[in-house]
Length: 195
Image 1: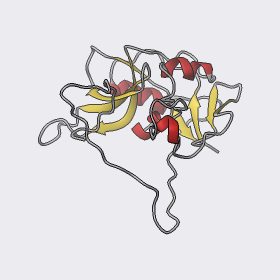
Image 2: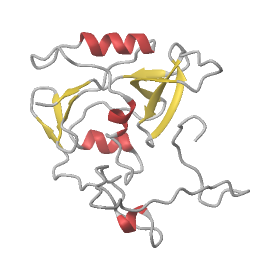
Image 3: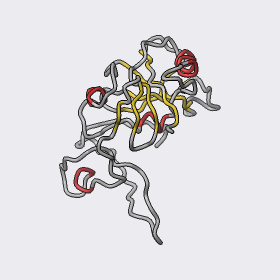
């Protein structure tokens, strides 16, 4: 909760450092519109695979329009079908997405971090392999970092604004890293609002 990272760790961490924020459905007809995570296997009573809370995914989740675009039937977003080549920096990733013309559309952009995370299927050991089986092409695992347009504000006091949020499609981890480091392989899956 300090910075907003999401990651993975062993369930038996020593010493235990786990904290809980419990949740339940809202009152007076309140409605949760978050999608399911994709986990369908239960490993303990009351876990995500057991309860499978959230909005059900449509079947199929993604539709390949045959013209280099993948339509997400859950979110309504349109995605670039083929992952970009390596970008030298976050600014290059922004330029790539903003300059993209694909299938007659020129309103492509770098996804925000929530849009990028919406591609994750946490019921799969390798998110990138699953995405490639859903019609995407060339989505890479480690060490590829997929850029979001969202700046990370947890970067000093006051924030230096020199970091952005990225998703590692290997295992679905959200991280922040420098916008200009040469030690990271930056990639892009451009997005646009659906029709």
